[in-house]
Length: 201
Image 1 (cartoon, one colour):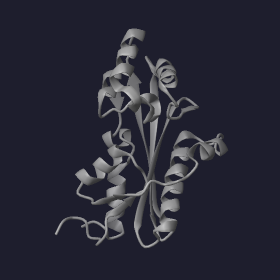
Image 2 (image 1 turned 90 degrees about the vertical axis):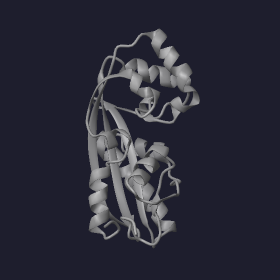
Image 3 (image 1 turned 45 degrees about the vertical axis):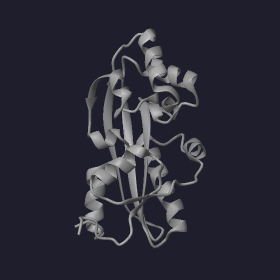
């Protein structure tokens, strides 16, 4: 018998390969059910909220949306926002938007706010927010274009136009924070919550 004590897998309300990989590496069986919510609309309605609060709201809304269809299952929602001061960034729409984001971020520090929510029976039983500070090196325009060529279409799949677990690490000179926060899932507090609800040994 493994560490996971439930007869059915944990439901992840996300299509993020990084989040799925983190959970599976920790010995948690995962079933993927991406939430169908209007993330940009929720962000727009929360423009006065801080980046951590927005990440937490999106994580809750994702988990609650999936839990409504699967009320007998444990559902995890997660989200991440990127901020420089009070300015929030979203996933870039295309290569040009990614290039602009990276030009704004290079040579500066920004914060990643990662949030997780655990929902059971339509009720939020746990939520947490964690923050990591990321400092990009002052790379040249030529290096930026080489990076964009190497990453290709995947550049639009993550806020900030990078994935730290891949080629995106090339953009940085310093990182302060938990590795799992950077990947978009505050894992340690989530594991504690799963133990508290009897899902983990």
